[in-house]
Length: 95
Image 1 (cartoon, one colour):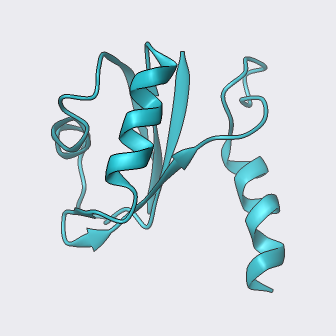
Image 2 (tube, rainbow, N blue to C red):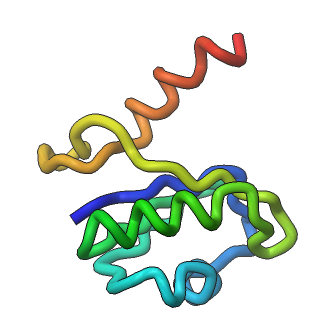
């Protein structure tokens, strides 16, 4: 399994929009949307690799989204990434 982060996500984006955006990139196990970002979990890490490579910088619901692999453990303790790790890692680049 492999989780992908979606940043700059439109507040109008719904789960079905994200599923359609990632359609054709393999079996999706979970879509987890937050305010302005989200995560997609793929069954096969190779499918996640393809999605990151092809979809980063593409338009989803009128916004040019960031699509990249998550880093670090999930909040629930399993591996895959999480919001807090992503924010800490990238905050120093913007500050």
